[in-house]
Length: 223
Image (spheres, rainbow, N blue to C red):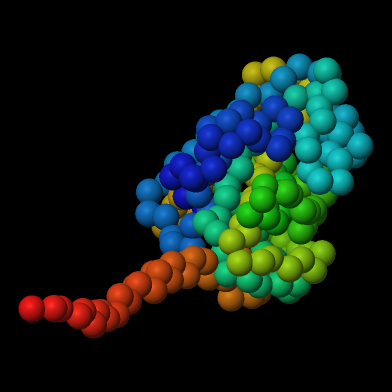
């Protein structure tokens, strides 16, 4: 999960409260330099308020006026070759909370984004992956069983990463890390059981040349 803008960065977000411009690239290539984003806790937020139905069936964040969901970043793959996602999915999410009283958690939503811009939920692991975050960066992971979903040529995978502090008071924060080298700080990724490759549109077939055949013209002359 890279710190590089997706070519969909100008697209209107399907997620309430997720600003245009926070669409990053879910690349098949490993990152090399850690990046991070920190979100501050908000007064009046607690975990019970954050649970369903505030998260609907397609992952739209429908926060009530007294609920603030923390950091939200969306990653989009490039267009992919046709594949059916049906095997286990393993997220590897790296984050921390600045204080044990922050009660911070991290979770994820995974979607198919069709070439026409329609979103279909692939996996929703619920309120959190793993236990509460600690005050040093660490991994939260799980084995997720997706809804079997077929991607056609040109479809994409969209990943919504959510981390939040649910302390009920201000003064705390949660930091998510990504774009790191393998096994190092910021090595946040999502691993699929299937072989996923990027789609390359077929080259356009050039038009056939028009062949003009010369014809002899018989002429009659009188002298």
